[in-house]
Length: 542
Ligand code: NAD
Image 1 (cartoon, helix red, strand yellow):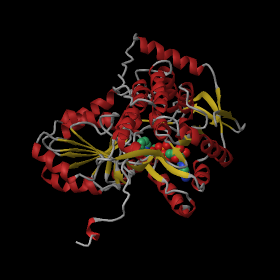
Image 2: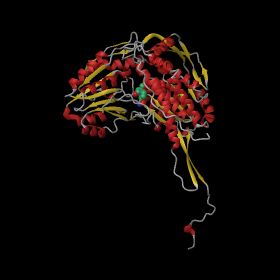
Image 3: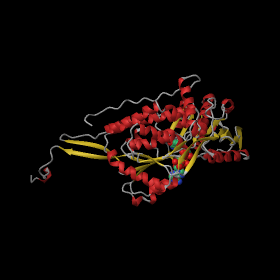
Image 4: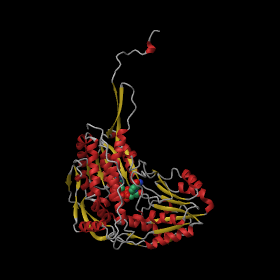
Protein backbone atom coordinates (compact mmCIF):
# COMPACT_ATOMS: atom_id res chain seq x y z
CA UNK A 1 0.00 0.00 0.00
CA UNK A 2 1.51 3.32 -1.00
CA UNK A 3 -1.54 5.42 -0.30
CA UNK A 4 -4.29 5.61 2.32
CA UNK A 5 -7.30 4.34 0.39
CA UNK A 6 -10.99 4.90 0.98
CA UNK A 7 -13.26 1.94 0.17
CA UNK A 8 -16.56 2.45 -1.70
CA UNK A 9 -19.26 3.78 0.64
CA UNK A 10 -21.65 0.89 1.28
CA UNK A 11 -25.38 1.18 0.66
CA UNK A 12 -27.92 -1.47 1.56
CA UNK A 13 -28.75 -3.71 -1.36
CA UNK A 14 -32.19 -2.93 -2.76
CA UNK A 15 -34.73 -5.70 -2.17
CA UNK A 16 -36.34 -6.83 -5.42
CA UNK A 17 -40.09 -7.41 -5.53
CA UNK A 18 -40.51 -10.49 -7.77
CA UNK A 19 -44.00 -9.40 -8.85
CA UNK A 20 -45.55 -11.57 -11.58
CA UNK A 21 -44.19 -10.57 -14.99
CA UNK A 22 -41.15 -8.72 -13.59
CA UNK A 23 -37.69 -9.41 -14.97
CA UNK A 24 -36.50 -10.75 -11.62
CA UNK A 25 -39.46 -13.12 -11.44
CA UNK A 26 -38.59 -14.58 -14.83
CA UNK A 27 -34.93 -14.84 -13.82
CA UNK A 28 -35.61 -16.64 -10.54
CA UNK A 29 -38.02 -19.07 -12.19
CA UNK A 30 -35.34 -19.87 -14.74
CA UNK A 31 -32.72 -20.33 -12.00
CA UNK A 32 -34.99 -22.75 -10.15
CA UNK A 33 -35.58 -24.74 -13.32
CA UNK A 34 -31.86 -24.86 -14.03
CA UNK A 35 -30.95 -26.03 -10.53
CA UNK A 36 -33.63 -28.70 -10.56
CA UNK A 37 -32.53 -30.00 -13.94
CA UNK A 38 -29.33 -31.43 -12.49
CA UNK A 39 -28.57 -33.43 -9.36
CA UNK A 40 -25.11 -32.29 -8.39
CA UNK A 41 -22.34 -33.81 -6.31
CA UNK A 42 -20.96 -31.37 -3.72
CA UNK A 43 -17.35 -31.83 -2.64
CA UNK A 44 -15.64 -30.22 0.34
CA UNK A 45 -13.20 -27.43 -0.53
CA UNK A 46 -9.89 -27.78 1.27
CA UNK A 47 -6.79 -25.83 0.30
CA UNK A 48 -8.64 -24.68 -2.82
CA UNK A 49 -9.15 -28.25 -3.98
CA UNK A 50 -12.33 -30.27 -4.27
CA UNK A 51 -12.19 -33.13 -1.78
CA UNK A 52 -14.48 -36.13 -2.10
CA UNK A 53 -14.95 -39.13 0.16
CA UNK A 54 -17.53 -41.13 -1.75
CA UNK A 55 -19.64 -41.21 1.41
CA UNK A 56 -22.62 -39.48 -0.19
CA UNK A 57 -25.52 -37.95 1.72
CA UNK A 58 -28.64 -36.73 -0.07
CA UNK A 59 -30.04 -33.21 -0.04
CA UNK A 60 -33.78 -33.17 -0.67
CA UNK A 61 -36.12 -30.19 -0.70
CA UNK A 62 -37.80 -29.92 2.73
CA UNK A 63 -41.13 -29.22 0.98
CA UNK A 64 -40.94 -32.15 -1.40
CA UNK A 65 -39.38 -35.47 -0.45
CA UNK A 66 -39.32 -36.47 -4.13
CA UNK A 67 -37.05 -33.60 -5.14
CA UNK A 68 -33.47 -34.78 -4.84
CA UNK A 69 -31.30 -31.69 -5.31
CA UNK A 70 -27.79 -32.91 -4.64
CA UNK A 71 -25.50 -35.31 -2.85
CA UNK A 72 -22.64 -34.10 -0.74
CA UNK A 73 -19.48 -35.88 0.27
CA UNK A 74 -19.63 -36.41 4.00
CA UNK A 75 -16.28 -36.10 5.69
CA UNK A 76 -14.82 -37.02 9.05
CA UNK A 77 -12.32 -35.61 11.49
CA UNK A 78 -9.64 -36.50 8.96
CA UNK A 79 -10.80 -33.80 6.55
CA UNK A 80 -11.10 -31.33 9.39
CA UNK A 81 -7.44 -31.96 10.24
CA UNK A 82 -6.56 -31.55 6.57
CA UNK A 83 -8.50 -28.27 6.46
CA UNK A 84 -6.70 -26.95 9.55
CA UNK A 85 -3.33 -27.80 8.02
CA UNK A 86 -4.24 -26.09 4.75
CA UNK A 87 -5.54 -23.05 6.57
CA UNK A 88 -2.36 -22.72 8.62
CA UNK A 89 -0.28 -23.11 5.49
CA UNK A 90 -2.19 -20.27 3.81
CA UNK A 91 -1.99 -18.09 6.90
CA UNK A 92 1.32 -16.36 6.46
CA UNK A 93 0.70 -15.05 2.97
CA UNK A 94 -2.92 -14.11 3.66
CA UNK A 95 -2.22 -12.38 6.95
CA UNK A 96 0.42 -10.27 5.21
CA UNK A 97 -1.80 -9.39 2.25
CA UNK A 98 -2.60 -5.69 2.30
CA UNK A 99 -6.08 -4.76 3.43
CA UNK A 100 -7.22 -3.26 0.18
CA UNK A 101 -6.45 -6.51 -1.65
CA UNK A 102 -8.47 -8.45 0.92
CA UNK A 103 -11.24 -5.89 0.68
CA UNK A 104 -11.32 -6.11 -3.11
CA UNK A 105 -11.94 -9.86 -3.02
CA UNK A 106 -14.96 -9.51 -0.74
CA UNK A 107 -16.28 -6.44 -2.56
CA UNK A 108 -16.06 -8.43 -5.76
CA UNK A 109 -17.93 -11.30 -4.09
CA UNK A 110 -20.66 -8.80 -3.16
CA UNK A 111 -20.84 -7.62 -6.76
CA UNK A 112 -21.09 -11.19 -8.02
CA UNK A 113 -23.91 -11.94 -5.58
CA UNK A 114 -25.68 -8.80 -6.68
CA UNK A 115 -25.26 -9.75 -10.34
CA UNK A 116 -24.43 -13.10 -11.89
CA UNK A 117 -25.06 -15.22 -8.79
CA UNK A 118 -28.11 -13.45 -7.36
CA UNK A 119 -30.80 -15.74 -8.73
CA UNK A 120 -28.73 -18.85 -8.27
CA UNK A 121 -28.08 -18.23 -4.56
CA UNK A 122 -31.73 -17.26 -4.03
CA UNK A 123 -33.01 -20.30 -5.93
CA UNK A 124 -30.71 -22.62 -3.98
CA UNK A 125 -31.92 -21.12 -0.70
CA UNK A 126 -35.55 -21.47 -1.78
CA UNK A 127 -35.13 -25.11 -2.75
CA UNK A 128 -32.65 -26.32 -0.14
CA UNK A 129 -33.93 -24.41 2.89
CA UNK A 130 -37.59 -23.99 1.82
CA UNK A 131 -37.76 -20.19 1.79
CA UNK A 132 -40.24 -18.20 -0.25
CA UNK A 133 -38.69 -15.84 -2.77
CA UNK A 134 -38.93 -12.77 -0.54
CA UNK A 135 -37.29 -14.55 2.39
CA UNK A 136 -34.54 -15.83 0.10
CA UNK A 137 -34.00 -12.39 -1.44
CA UNK A 138 -33.65 -10.58 1.90
CA UNK A 139 -31.31 -13.26 3.21
CA UNK A 140 -29.24 -15.00 0.54
CA UNK A 141 -28.86 -12.02 -1.77
CA UNK A 142 -29.35 -8.77 0.15
CA UNK A 143 -28.02 -9.56 3.60
CA UNK A 144 -25.03 -11.45 2.18
CA UNK A 145 -24.17 -8.50 -0.06
CA UNK A 146 -24.63 -6.07 2.83
CA UNK A 147 -22.39 -8.09 5.15
CA UNK A 148 -19.62 -8.08 2.57
CA UNK A 149 -19.87 -4.41 1.60
CA UNK A 150 -20.41 -2.99 5.09
CA UNK A 151 -17.71 -5.13 6.67
CA UNK A 152 -15.15 -3.58 4.35
CA UNK A 153 -16.20 -0.16 5.57
CA UNK A 154 -16.02 -1.32 9.21
CA UNK A 155 -12.58 -2.77 8.61
CA UNK A 156 -11.38 0.58 7.28
CA UNK A 157 -13.02 2.34 10.25
CA UNK A 158 -11.21 0.00 12.66
CA UNK A 159 -7.88 0.66 10.99
CA UNK A 160 -8.53 4.37 11.33
CA UNK A 161 -8.77 4.15 15.12
CA UNK A 162 -5.34 5.41 16.16
CA UNK A 163 -3.83 6.62 19.45
CA UNK A 164 -2.73 10.17 20.21
CA UNK A 165 0.86 11.27 19.69
CA UNK A 166 3.31 13.51 21.55
CA UNK A 167 5.83 15.66 19.78
CA UNK A 168 8.74 13.46 18.66
CA UNK A 169 6.84 10.18 18.99
CA UNK A 170 4.45 8.42 16.72
CA UNK A 171 2.05 5.89 18.33
CA UNK A 172 0.45 3.44 15.99
CA UNK A 173 -2.09 0.66 16.38
CA UNK A 174 -1.87 -2.34 14.12
CA UNK A 175 -4.79 -4.74 13.92
CA UNK A 176 -3.12 -8.11 13.56
CA UNK A 177 -5.05 -11.16 12.39
CA UNK A 178 -5.30 -13.77 15.14
CA UNK A 179 -2.46 -16.27 15.40
CA UNK A 180 -3.98 -19.55 14.31
CA UNK A 181 -7.20 -20.53 12.56
CA UNK A 182 -10.85 -19.65 13.10
CA UNK A 183 -13.40 -22.45 13.36
CA UNK A 184 -16.68 -21.18 11.83
CA UNK A 185 -19.78 -23.27 12.51
CA UNK A 186 -22.98 -22.05 10.88
CA UNK A 187 -26.72 -22.79 11.22
CA UNK A 188 -29.20 -23.92 8.56
CA UNK A 189 -31.54 -20.97 8.61
CA UNK A 190 -29.65 -18.05 7.04
CA UNK A 191 -27.43 -18.34 3.99
CA UNK A 192 -26.05 -14.89 4.78
CA UNK A 193 -25.07 -15.87 8.33
CA UNK A 194 -23.15 -18.85 6.97
CA UNK A 195 -21.28 -16.54 4.62
CA UNK A 196 -20.57 -13.97 7.31
CA UNK A 197 -19.30 -16.47 9.86
CA UNK A 198 -16.58 -17.52 7.45
CA UNK A 199 -16.02 -14.27 5.56
CA UNK A 200 -15.83 -11.74 8.42
CA UNK A 201 -12.73 -13.28 10.07
CA UNK A 202 -11.15 -13.92 6.65
CA UNK A 203 -11.65 -10.28 5.65
CA UNK A 204 -9.66 -9.26 8.73
CA UNK A 205 -6.75 -11.44 7.56
CA UNK A 206 -7.57 -14.72 9.29
CA UNK A 207 -7.77 -18.22 7.87
CA UNK A 208 -10.91 -20.23 8.42
CA UNK A 209 -12.17 -23.79 8.69
CA UNK A 210 -15.89 -23.51 7.98
CA UNK A 211 -18.39 -26.23 8.81
CA UNK A 212 -21.84 -25.38 7.47
CA UNK A 213 -25.00 -27.03 8.79
CA UNK A 214 -25.91 -30.13 6.81
CA UNK A 215 -29.24 -28.57 5.81
CA UNK A 216 -27.57 -25.55 4.25
CA UNK A 217 -24.90 -27.28 2.18
CA UNK A 218 -26.81 -26.76 -1.09
CA UNK A 219 -26.51 -22.94 -0.85
CA UNK A 220 -23.14 -23.14 0.97
CA UNK A 221 -21.66 -24.65 -2.17
CA UNK A 222 -22.73 -21.61 -4.17
CA UNK A 223 -21.28 -19.25 -1.57
CA UNK A 224 -17.99 -21.07 -1.96
CA UNK A 225 -18.27 -20.79 -5.77
CA UNK A 226 -18.77 -17.04 -5.37
CA UNK A 227 -15.75 -16.63 -3.09
CA UNK A 228 -13.56 -18.62 -5.43
CA UNK A 229 -14.83 -16.66 -8.45
CA UNK A 230 -13.98 -13.48 -6.54
CA UNK A 231 -10.38 -14.67 -6.25
CA UNK A 232 -10.16 -15.82 -2.65
CA UNK A 233 -6.80 -17.60 -2.42
CA UNK A 234 -6.67 -21.32 -1.70
CA UNK A 235 -6.76 -22.30 1.96
CA UNK A 236 -8.12 -19.01 3.32
CA UNK A 237 -11.63 -20.44 3.78
CA UNK A 238 -11.91 -24.22 3.82
CA UNK A 239 -15.36 -25.77 3.71
CA UNK A 240 -15.72 -29.14 5.43
CA UNK A 241 -18.70 -31.43 5.92
CA UNK A 242 -18.48 -33.56 9.03
CA UNK A 243 -20.74 -34.35 11.97
CA UNK A 244 -20.69 -31.31 14.27
CA UNK A 245 -19.28 -32.99 17.32
CA UNK A 246 -16.62 -34.87 15.38
CA UNK A 247 -15.49 -31.67 13.64
CA UNK A 248 -15.48 -29.79 16.94
CA UNK A 249 -13.49 -32.48 18.72
CA UNK A 250 -10.70 -32.12 16.16
CA UNK A 251 -10.77 -28.33 15.89
CA UNK A 252 -10.98 -27.69 19.62
CA UNK A 253 -8.11 -30.03 20.42
CA UNK A 254 -5.79 -28.17 18.05
CA UNK A 255 -3.18 -25.88 19.66
CA UNK A 256 -3.64 -23.30 16.87
CA UNK A 257 -7.34 -22.71 17.48
CA UNK A 258 -7.55 -18.91 17.60
CA UNK A 259 -11.30 -18.41 17.62
CA UNK A 260 -14.76 -19.87 17.17
CA UNK A 261 -17.37 -18.03 15.13
CA UNK A 262 -20.62 -19.80 15.82
CA UNK A 263 -24.31 -19.28 15.22
CA UNK A 264 -26.78 -21.95 16.25
CA UNK A 265 -28.40 -23.35 19.36
CA UNK A 266 -27.41 -22.39 22.87
CA UNK A 267 -26.65 -26.01 23.86
CA UNK A 268 -24.16 -26.52 21.04
CA UNK A 269 -22.38 -23.25 21.82
CA UNK A 270 -22.21 -24.23 25.48
CA UNK A 271 -20.65 -27.54 24.46
CA UNK A 272 -18.08 -25.71 22.32
CA UNK A 273 -17.25 -23.38 25.21
CA UNK A 274 -16.82 -26.40 27.50
CA UNK A 275 -14.57 -28.02 24.90
CA UNK A 276 -12.38 -24.93 24.82
CA UNK A 277 -12.27 -24.97 28.62
CA UNK A 278 -11.18 -28.59 28.62
CA UNK A 279 -8.37 -27.82 26.18
CA UNK A 280 -7.39 -24.43 27.55
CA UNK A 281 -3.88 -25.32 28.65
CA UNK A 282 -3.00 -26.60 25.20
CA UNK A 283 -3.64 -23.47 23.13
CA UNK A 284 -0.97 -21.05 21.93
CA UNK A 285 -3.40 -18.17 22.43
CA UNK A 286 -6.71 -17.69 24.23
CA UNK A 287 -9.33 -18.46 21.56
CA UNK A 288 -11.94 -15.79 20.87
CA UNK A 289 -15.40 -17.24 21.43
CA UNK A 290 -18.16 -15.56 19.48
CA UNK A 291 -21.56 -17.23 19.50
CA UNK A 292 -25.01 -16.02 18.55
CA UNK A 293 -27.50 -18.54 19.84
CA UNK A 294 -31.14 -19.13 20.67
CA UNK A 295 -34.02 -16.83 21.46
CA UNK A 296 -37.50 -16.70 22.92
CA UNK A 297 -38.45 -13.42 21.40
CA UNK A 298 -41.39 -11.44 22.68
CA UNK A 299 -44.04 -9.04 21.50
CA UNK A 300 -45.44 -6.98 24.36
CA UNK A 301 -48.47 -4.82 23.72
CA UNK A 302 -49.41 -2.00 26.08
CA UNK A 303 -53.10 -1.07 26.35
CA UNK A 304 -52.29 2.11 24.38
CA UNK A 305 -51.06 0.08 21.37
CA UNK A 306 -52.93 -0.10 18.07
CA UNK A 307 -54.38 -3.58 17.68
CA UNK A 308 -53.81 -3.91 13.94
CA UNK A 309 -50.13 -3.06 14.33
CA UNK A 310 -49.73 -5.66 17.06
CA UNK A 311 -51.50 -8.31 14.99
CA UNK A 312 -49.37 -7.60 11.91
CA UNK A 313 -46.19 -7.80 13.97
CA UNK A 314 -47.34 -11.16 15.32
CA UNK A 315 -48.35 -12.66 12.00
CA UNK A 316 -45.24 -11.53 10.17
CA UNK A 317 -42.84 -11.73 13.11
CA UNK A 318 -43.87 -15.23 14.16
CA UNK A 319 -44.52 -16.99 10.88
CA UNK A 320 -42.24 -15.64 8.18
CA UNK A 321 -39.83 -18.41 7.25
CA UNK A 322 -42.02 -20.70 9.37
CA UNK A 323 -40.76 -19.06 12.55
CA UNK A 324 -37.27 -20.45 11.93
CA UNK A 325 -35.51 -17.18 12.64
CA UNK A 326 -33.63 -16.71 15.87
CA UNK A 327 -35.48 -13.39 16.12
CA UNK A 328 -38.98 -14.79 15.42
CA UNK A 329 -41.76 -13.67 17.76
CA UNK A 330 -42.66 -16.74 19.76
CA UNK A 331 -44.37 -15.36 22.86
CA UNK A 332 -46.81 -12.48 23.06
CA UNK A 333 -48.36 -10.52 25.91
CA UNK A 334 -51.63 -8.84 24.97
CA UNK A 335 -53.81 -6.65 27.23
CA UNK A 336 -57.38 -7.91 27.69
CA UNK A 337 -58.86 -4.67 26.35
CA UNK A 338 -57.04 -5.11 23.00
CA UNK A 339 -57.31 -8.87 22.72
CA UNK A 340 -60.64 -9.18 20.82
CA UNK A 341 -59.40 -6.80 18.11
CA UNK A 342 -55.86 -8.27 17.97
CA UNK A 343 -57.32 -11.78 17.73
CA UNK A 344 -59.65 -10.79 14.93
CA UNK A 345 -56.84 -9.23 12.82
CA UNK A 346 -54.44 -12.07 13.57
CA UNK A 347 -56.90 -14.80 12.61
CA UNK A 348 -57.78 -12.83 9.50
CA UNK A 349 -54.08 -12.64 8.52
CA UNK A 350 -53.56 -16.33 9.14
CA UNK A 351 -56.64 -17.26 7.12
CA UNK A 352 -54.97 -15.58 4.14
CA UNK A 353 -51.63 -17.39 4.47
CA UNK A 354 -51.16 -20.11 1.90
CA UNK A 355 -48.80 -22.98 2.71
CA UNK A 356 -46.85 -25.10 0.25
CA UNK A 357 -43.79 -25.19 -1.95
CA UNK A 358 -41.77 -21.98 -2.41
CA UNK A 359 -41.87 -22.75 -6.13
CA UNK A 360 -45.53 -21.67 -6.01
CA UNK A 361 -45.00 -17.96 -5.37
CA UNK A 362 -48.40 -17.46 -3.79
CA UNK A 363 -47.31 -19.45 -0.73
CA UNK A 364 -46.40 -17.33 2.29
CA UNK A 365 -45.53 -20.37 4.42
CA UNK A 366 -43.29 -23.22 3.31
CA UNK A 367 -41.92 -26.34 4.99
CA UNK A 368 -39.90 -26.61 8.19
CA UNK A 369 -36.34 -27.72 7.66
CA UNK A 370 -36.33 -31.46 8.39
CA UNK A 371 -37.99 -34.40 10.08
CA UNK A 372 -36.29 -33.78 13.41
CA UNK A 373 -37.67 -30.24 13.57
CA UNK A 374 -41.07 -31.47 12.35
CA UNK A 375 -41.29 -34.13 15.06
CA UNK A 376 -40.15 -31.78 17.80
CA UNK A 377 -42.61 -29.06 16.83
CA UNK A 378 -45.58 -31.35 16.36
CA UNK A 379 -44.81 -32.88 19.76
CA UNK A 380 -45.30 -29.44 21.35
CA UNK A 381 -48.50 -28.93 19.34
CA UNK A 382 -49.89 -32.29 20.48
CA UNK A 383 -48.98 -31.48 24.07
CA UNK A 384 -50.89 -28.18 23.76
CA UNK A 385 -53.92 -29.95 22.30
CA UNK A 386 -54.21 -32.00 25.46
CA UNK A 387 -53.29 -29.42 28.09
CA UNK A 388 -56.02 -27.90 30.29
CA UNK A 389 -54.31 -24.48 30.54
CA UNK A 390 -54.09 -23.77 26.85
CA UNK A 391 -56.19 -23.43 23.73
CA UNK A 392 -55.09 -23.59 20.12
CA UNK A 393 -56.92 -20.81 18.29
CA UNK A 394 -55.30 -21.23 14.87
CA UNK A 395 -53.47 -23.98 13.02
CA UNK A 396 -52.52 -27.11 14.90
CA UNK A 397 -52.49 -29.36 11.83
CA UNK A 398 -49.45 -30.82 10.19
CA UNK A 399 -48.53 -33.27 7.47
CA UNK A 400 -45.20 -34.76 6.46
CA UNK A 401 -46.41 -36.98 3.63
CA UNK A 402 -45.09 -34.70 0.85
CA UNK A 403 -42.89 -32.27 2.78
CA UNK A 404 -42.50 -31.09 6.37
CA UNK A 405 -45.55 -28.85 6.61
CA UNK A 406 -46.88 -27.42 9.85
CA UNK A 407 -49.70 -24.89 9.90
CA UNK A 408 -48.95 -21.58 11.58
CA UNK A 409 -50.19 -22.33 15.06
CA UNK A 410 -51.34 -19.93 17.75
CA UNK A 411 -51.64 -21.15 21.31
CA UNK A 412 -53.33 -19.03 23.97
CA UNK A 413 -52.29 -19.90 27.49
CA UNK A 414 -53.69 -19.03 30.89
CA UNK A 415 -50.32 -19.87 32.44
CA UNK A 416 -47.66 -17.28 31.54
CA UNK A 417 -44.99 -19.86 32.39
CA UNK A 418 -46.42 -22.57 30.16
CA UNK A 419 -43.68 -24.58 28.45
CA UNK A 420 -44.03 -22.88 25.05
CA UNK A 421 -43.73 -19.42 26.67
CA UNK A 422 -40.22 -20.36 27.85
CA UNK A 423 -38.68 -22.91 25.51
CA UNK A 424 -37.27 -22.04 22.10
CA UNK A 425 -39.26 -24.13 19.59
CA UNK A 426 -37.85 -22.63 16.39
CA UNK A 427 -40.91 -23.12 14.23
CA UNK A 428 -44.34 -21.75 13.33
CA UNK A 429 -45.78 -21.83 16.85
CA UNK A 430 -46.71 -18.64 18.68
CA UNK A 431 -47.93 -18.62 22.26
CA UNK A 432 -49.93 -15.71 23.65
CA UNK A 433 -50.81 -14.69 27.16
CA UNK A 434 -53.67 -12.26 27.68
CA UNK A 435 -53.19 -10.07 30.76
CA UNK A 436 -55.41 -7.65 32.65
CA UNK A 437 -54.62 -4.08 31.59
CA UNK A 438 -53.91 -2.99 35.14
CA UNK A 439 -51.15 -5.62 35.45
CA UNK A 440 -48.78 -4.08 32.90
CA UNK A 441 -46.00 -3.58 35.47
CA UNK A 442 -46.17 -7.23 36.55
CA UNK A 443 -46.11 -8.27 32.92
CA UNK A 444 -42.85 -6.38 32.42
CA UNK A 445 -41.30 -8.60 35.07
CA UNK A 446 -42.78 -11.68 33.42
CA UNK A 447 -41.37 -10.72 30.03
CA UNK A 448 -37.97 -10.18 31.58
CA UNK A 449 -37.83 -13.36 33.64
CA UNK A 450 -39.80 -16.04 31.80
CA UNK A 451 -37.08 -17.30 29.48
CA UNK A 452 -33.29 -17.57 29.79
CA UNK A 453 -32.75 -15.74 26.49
CA UNK A 454 -32.18 -12.10 25.63
CA UNK A 455 -32.20 -11.82 21.85
CA UNK A 456 -35.04 -9.73 20.39
CA UNK A 457 -38.25 -8.23 21.67
CA UNK A 458 -40.88 -5.75 20.54
CA UNK A 459 -42.94 -3.27 22.49
CA UNK A 460 -46.12 -1.79 21.06
CA UNK A 461 -47.48 1.36 22.73
CA UNK A 462 -48.45 4.92 21.93
CA UNK A 463 -48.18 6.10 25.55
CA UNK A 464 -44.70 7.67 25.76
CA UNK A 465 -44.40 7.10 29.52
CA UNK A 466 -45.16 3.41 28.98
CA UNK A 467 -42.51 3.27 26.25
CA UNK A 468 -39.92 4.78 28.54
CA UNK A 469 -40.84 2.57 31.49
CA UNK A 470 -40.82 -0.64 29.44
CA UNK A 471 -37.56 0.29 27.70
CA UNK A 472 -35.94 0.59 31.11
CA UNK A 473 -37.54 -2.49 32.66
CA UNK A 474 -36.55 -4.63 29.69
CA UNK A 475 -33.04 -3.29 29.30
CA UNK A 476 -31.47 -6.75 29.56
CA UNK A 477 -34.32 -8.71 28.01
CA UNK A 478 -33.27 -8.13 24.40
CA UNK A 479 -30.13 -7.17 22.51
CA UNK A 480 -32.37 -5.94 19.68
CA UNK A 481 -35.34 -4.06 21.11
CA UNK A 482 -38.03 -2.80 18.76
CA UNK A 483 -40.56 -0.08 19.50
CA UNK A 484 -43.70 -0.41 17.40
CA UNK A 485 -42.14 -2.85 14.96
CA UNK A 486 -41.87 -6.62 14.67
CA UNK A 487 -38.81 -8.20 16.32
CA UNK A 488 -37.36 -9.67 13.10
CA UNK A 489 -35.67 -8.24 10.02
CA UNK A 490 -32.50 -6.56 11.33
CA UNK A 491 -30.62 -4.88 8.50
CA UNK A 492 -26.82 -4.74 8.29
CA UNK A 493 -25.58 -1.24 9.03
CA UNK A 494 -28.87 -0.22 10.63
CA UNK A 495 -29.66 -2.65 13.45
CA UNK A 496 -26.46 -4.46 14.52
CA UNK A 497 -27.69 -7.88 15.61
CA UNK A 498 -27.21 -10.06 18.67
CA UNK A 499 -28.32 -10.75 22.21
CA UNK A 500 -26.89 -11.70 25.55
CA UNK A 501 -27.98 -13.98 28.40
CA UNK A 502 -28.47 -17.46 26.83
CA UNK A 503 -28.65 -15.84 23.37
CA UNK A 504 -24.94 -15.47 22.95
CA UNK A 505 -21.94 -13.23 23.33
CA UNK A 506 -23.73 -10.26 21.70
CA UNK A 507 -20.87 -9.40 19.40
CA UNK A 508 -23.28 -7.79 16.94
CA UNK A 509 -23.01 -9.26 13.49
CA UNK A 510 -23.14 -6.55 10.87
CA UNK A 511 -21.12 -4.04 12.85
CA UNK A 512 -17.57 -3.05 13.68
CA UNK A 513 -17.98 -4.77 17.06
CA UNK A 514 -17.96 -8.20 15.47
CA UNK A 515 -14.87 -7.50 13.37
CA UNK A 516 -12.97 -6.31 16.42
CA UNK A 517 -13.14 -9.87 17.75
CA UNK A 518 -11.05 -11.12 14.82
CA UNK A 519 -8.03 -8.92 15.36
CA UNK A 520 -5.42 -8.60 18.06
CA UNK A 521 -4.04 -5.06 18.25
CA UNK A 522 -0.33 -4.34 18.42
CA UNK A 523 0.68 -0.95 19.76
CA UNK A 524 3.82 0.51 18.25
CA UNK A 525 5.58 3.49 19.80
CA UNK A 526 8.26 5.02 17.67
CA UNK A 527 10.49 7.59 19.26
CA UNK A 528 12.20 10.18 17.04
CA UNK A 529 14.47 11.62 19.71
CA UNK A 530 15.47 8.76 21.99
CA UNK A 531 16.86 9.92 25.36
CA UNK A 532 20.64 9.79 25.69
CA UNK A 533 20.95 10.55 29.41
CA UNK A 534 19.43 8.40 32.13
CA UNK A 535 19.24 11.28 34.70
CA UNK A 536 15.84 12.61 35.75
CA UNK A 537 15.59 16.15 37.19
CA UNK A 538 14.67 14.84 40.66
CA UNK A 539 18.07 13.13 40.88
CA UNK A 540 19.95 16.43 40.80
CA UNK A 541 21.82 17.62 43.95
CA UNK A 542 20.02 20.95 44.11
P1 NAD B 1 -27.68 -26.17 15.69
O1 NAD B 1 -27.11 -25.71 16.97
O2 NAD B 1 -28.38 -27.47 15.65
O3 NAD B 1 -26.52 -26.27 14.59
C1 NAD B 1 -25.65 -25.19 14.35
C2 NAD B 1 -24.34 -25.74 13.82
O4 NAD B 1 -23.70 -26.48 14.86
C3 NAD B 1 -24.50 -26.70 12.65
O5 NAD B 1 -23.46 -26.50 11.74
C4 NAD B 1 -24.39 -28.05 13.32
O6 NAD B 1 -23.96 -29.08 12.46
C5 NAD B 1 -23.35 -27.78 14.37
N1 NAD B 1 -23.37 -28.71 15.50
C6 NAD B 1 -24.38 -29.46 15.95
N2 NAD B 1 -23.98 -30.17 17.03
C7 NAD B 1 -22.70 -29.84 17.26
C8 NAD B 1 -21.75 -30.22 18.25
N3 NAD B 1 -22.04 -31.06 19.21
N4 NAD B 1 -20.53 -29.65 18.18
C9 NAD B 1 -20.22 -28.76 17.22
N5 NAD B 1 -21.08 -28.37 16.28
C10 NAD B 1 -22.31 -28.90 16.30
O7 NAD B 1 -28.62 -24.98 15.14
P2 NAD B 1 -29.52 -24.93 13.83
O8 NAD B 1 -30.68 -25.86 14.00
O9 NAD B 1 -28.71 -25.04 12.60
O10 NAD B 1 -30.03 -23.43 13.90
C11 NAD B 1 -31.05 -23.06 14.77
C12 NAD B 1 -30.52 -22.40 16.01
O11 NAD B 1 -29.68 -21.33 15.65
C13 NAD B 1 -31.61 -21.80 16.87
O12 NAD B 1 -31.35 -22.05 18.21
C14 NAD B 1 -31.50 -20.32 16.56
O13 NAD B 1 -32.02 -19.47 17.56
C15 NAD B 1 -30.04 -20.15 16.36
N6 NAD B 1 -29.73 -18.98 15.57
C16 NAD B 1 -29.29 -17.88 16.23
C17 NAD B 1 -29.00 -16.71 15.53
C18 NAD B 1 -28.51 -15.48 16.25
O14 NAD B 1 -28.03 -14.57 15.59
N7 NAD B 1 -28.63 -15.42 17.56
C19 NAD B 1 -29.17 -16.69 14.15
C20 NAD B 1 -29.61 -17.83 13.51
C21 NAD B 1 -29.88 -18.99 14.23
